[in-house]
Length: 205
Figure 1: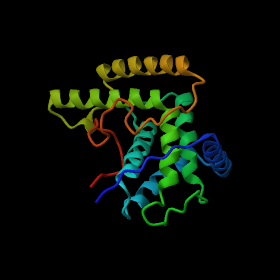
Figure 2: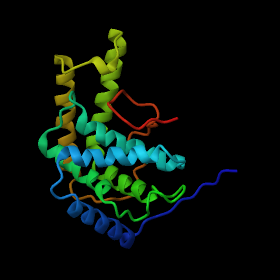
Figure 3: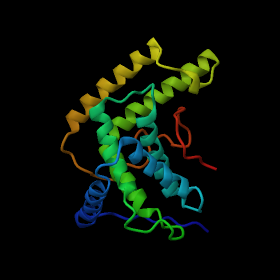
Figure 4: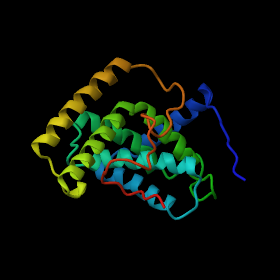
């Protein structure tokens, strides 16, 4: 019989994870963008080899979205925005996890917490990218083509610029808010299991 567990991280708990993130950034110093992304991809690959609870899987899907955001040629993140995402991905380059990944069931719990904190920090980036992917998927369906084949056509560029501008405006408005309450893994209330096409690597069975 399944059970539901809720837990809250206080300021001291958050400070602990912040220190872990800072340590990871130091460990990742000197790594290229490609190496940082590869670390996160490798972690997702390891996670798919073992059983993980759904609430962790949900967060790993959001990590997959962050990776896709950086890799997606059509989205083409500006350098400053890309650095914000890569900074969050650096945690997964640190071999000294808070909880070792090989611990059964809960091995990826600390990774899920770090992803959750990153989702809060990257809320507007993720919102904009989700909207872009939904738009691309609907346009692909309208045209009767595979979404993965759509490149940076004029209509895609126009929608992308609109979403990027809105993302920047919202981020500037909310600057300094902090973590706040749990964001969940889908800021708009949608399930990440149903999402617009993106060049992701994490597959849900």
